[in-house]
Image (cartoon, rainbow, N blue to C red; front, side, top):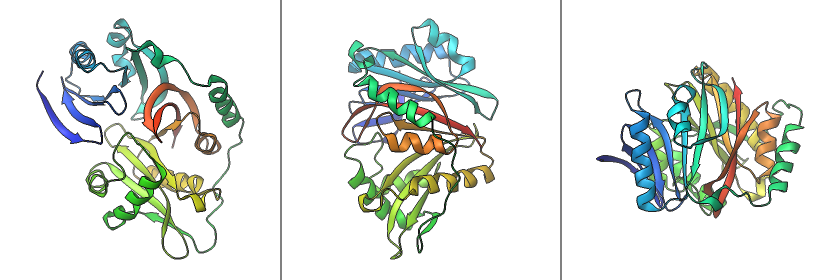
Length: 287
């Protein structure tokens, strides 16, 4: 099957295959079907990605698809791990579906802790934004900020599914589908940031790439960024916000629950982040 390479990431590649956009490689040891064109045949896509997975001996296939296209995947042995209502334009649900090619990949490490984090997070009451500390500011980031952004990402994340520690990559996505926001201290140093990965056609946004320098943690910057980003996305006509958070992070799961997000499911052993393959929790909110 002919492919057209789009973006080479650290260890993985993003490319077109059978009318679908996929990411695959050894870093995450998986294929991630990110989007199918409206003309793509689900059966042809399944055949192509499974052939690619066998060729490269990947452990997992992970897909995001409109609910209306689920039947072909269900009939091919895919399972639903998460579901976001009204994901596409506020009208159609999105399903996060998987097929495990390595049986060990479906086994959770420390499932009691993972479930405790979900339970603790869901028990939290919704909290409004409290404001930043004195002399701190929050604004949208631009091309001139990408060097500082990359430095923070490189310090915070030993590994990440996309090369966010590369300023060239940050500029590329910033010029395409990403808006980033950051908190600055009293000396105008960037100390915390996050990004909005926007699907303008589907009117949804992934709230992602949250990172805070160690000396500035515990001050609620992620919560403030999330609130600010939601307002910006709502003004931009976006209807649904979601995140894919590390399942073993109390902080990030609690942040989204306290901001009014609903738990949508867990993606087992899905993403290489912070030095290992980790399970990820999906949270969503209509904004």
